[in-house]
Image 1 (cartoon, rainbow, N blue to C red):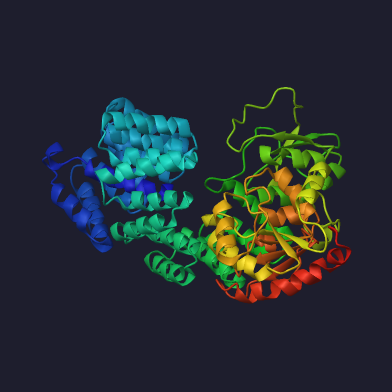
Image 2: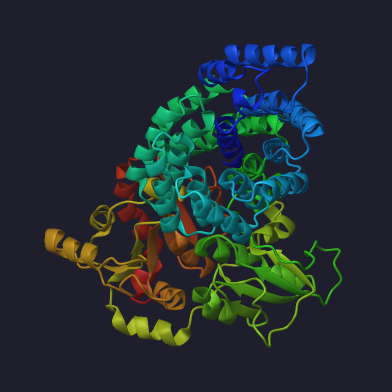
Length: 628
């Protein structure tokens, strides 16, 4: 995203480029217009002409600065740096040349140097809003978000009509997770400059984060209208099309992006994700490897390749590549200053902080490795979301469990808790303890529900010969394939409804209206359970009180498996690595059976098998008339 932003900033540099009136000896005005309106061949020719003019005639700072601007626009940061430095030799106090040099260094990832030159430009022209906006980009790239926001805010105070400053404020808000604020700020930039294609594209990304996919699609399409030559905006469009399940359209969009720039890393990464999602793992692997040949350290490409390996149960290489998730933009992994735990060679007796990342389901899955860590002699402090604290504390009594929100201050470590010697994100535990199939333990369960609450739910549910079947029909968010892995309550309820079945709601969220509609339209009553809004700990007890669970890929699937309860998991045709590429079993949860969709969007064949599968799964419990 920032690479495209640098290019957009280059346009503002050209608009501010010195005019011929700065030096009558050089008539740059006509060339500036031709460069702005010309195609790539014409622009290259103009650069060659300007270079020849500067070499044959008197050298001047204005011409060298203009040359740097043009080179930077075409992505040639190294020769642009040379031109700007020559301009500064001729005119050391040129704010324009200092600014341009800062942007060139930013493109070259020499961030400290870039910061100094942009700071110098600001000192020369402290009221220049563009300089402040560009200076803030360095802070944005360094993840110094408060400092970046301060500079962008000051830029808006100097020039309230500067679209770049408002746009960049929106990007800060987006990185901070303030999605609604980001949408508002980016839209303010678009009021000032409706043809700002990059802002339209970033608006699409923000709307996607807000789960407003139809609006996101409209914004992404608008971005392609204004920046038709940018591969990046087409990739954003393809990502949203994939979220909507429009895989054929996304594939065509990415083919177009490749025709624009065959070396655009983001396009190859997006192709890899699409190919993996459409069960073409070998091609997906090739796409990610192509991206890595272009940029060997690209975090999204490494992480995507890692997930393909995990999908295929290539555990060791998969986990090693999965570590790249720490470096992606908006990474869920928090950074602590303490040393990281580095495996079996660490001395025994260390206090190790294991900190949560990603969603509830992933935390539950990765927690299966905690006994392995403690078997190495480590004393463990586990930081999890507050909703998981009680369940984890009961399940791992030898662990100190701390409940903290995902966005709390890293320096706000609760008083009275033990200090720690090492730390590790919970998603990195399998890298040490699940490197081959034999590393997966055969234990049926590792989480323990509250016995009193289990008794409460037994009393609440119908007893006798009726089987108590917990159901969850919706999972994930737009970016994690919710559209593909969810189905309607009525579809699932009609497939499971039987005289000897009592359906129990285990779906998280406000589902009262759905349950009422099902009863009214189909005469099927589902026990409301926790009414969709209960605590995870109580949900665990209700899960144990059921004879079996039928769920889509969701937190409920992980909870069911970790509790060792029998369950059927409806797996879409494009599963995440957690559910593997094939097979009816998962090494993570021996009690679960995976029921796989054969064709994207078509759940009918799967639903048609559920009654017989469920009867086989619950036969022992049904025969006894009690919960298994």
